[in-house]
Amino acid sequence: MITLTPSALNAVRSAIAGAADPAGGLRITVDAGGCAGYKYMMGLAGEAGPEDTIIDQDGVKVFIDSKSQDLLTGTTIDFVVALEGSGFTFDNPNAKSSCGCGKSFG
Image (cartoon, rainbow, N blue to C red):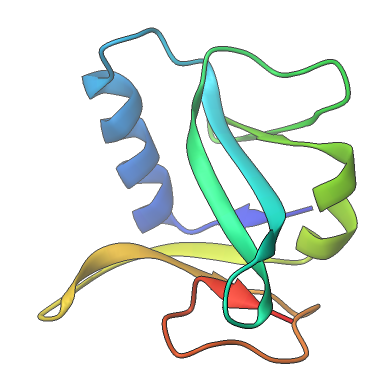
């Protein structure tokens, strides 16, 4: 199970409301790559895939594919606004290491 903070939920709701194409939720995957071994990928999706787990948090649907589930279990996703820029951050208890940008882990 993953958790989105209230700030992340608001950011996703805003993205869905402003999307050019209808979006049913947020897709989160983990792919090989990045400077630490794995990288987080996020984007709006029209619907869940056949192998996806669907998490509904306060009306926001999150789609996670089966290969990413174990790597994301227990992760908290936040949306931060800072002087350096705004974006999503991941607090992943499964990460043994991470890079400085916060977008990849090992």
